Length: 341
Image (cartoon, rainbow, N blue to C red; front, side, top):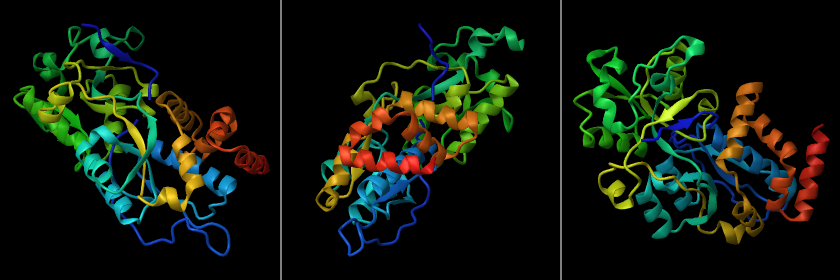
């Protein structure tokens, strides 16, 4: 079987801070300019970069000076959109929680403004040096025949859990995530709970930190991860194979590969009527994983924050974002950028 190497790659997933919402005026016209547009804030950088790009364009190009973001989680974001406490969620991972999409969008009042990107993945990873070795670092291959999740029972001792050495450790995502639940179901369905403990990280940051720390030490690591994220721009990891994605199998047992998750922009039911110009803008917004990977690597390489990455994108990818907006909006945003220089 052919291994899928993930060298210079970068999302995210995954999910949710606590909901901190207060009623807001919405983006209906007010006496002094336009009102607010509220975007969903999440802990991962992909959301924050996208938010900062859009907030800059909304403020300087469209005149929504109150554009801002507030923290939410996946379930609470849908609920906030339904209640009208939130206008936009820029990065809703549809296939990670299809039942919520069905409830709040297909059967509910929320509106899908379009797909931001779908060229991402989720899965289980190990450092490539475990399979191929790394002569430059003096690391020998410890699991040369490890290709798929079905081989893991033969190698569990390599991933020994320091808290329970009689089993290996599988690094799962954070509590409350649909991905965490899916990984738990996979471990059980693949018969791996006999060999591995399901170790749930406290957050996405903690999970990523454990992967990076193990990699820097040349140690074994097995766990769940996704793209786009900056970690995979730095680390050479191999995604373990599963049976090809099958919707019926995944929906019932999870015992196949994760789907490439569609990431859509979801808005509250009356947003297109209240803010038709902004709704059109969000409908045009596209940010594929490859470009987001660049922005995440830029942050890591330069120490820039999410606002800095957003400004980098607006300056370096003018030919991209100008296709999202009318010419008069482009002129205003361009002038605002030049004023910062």
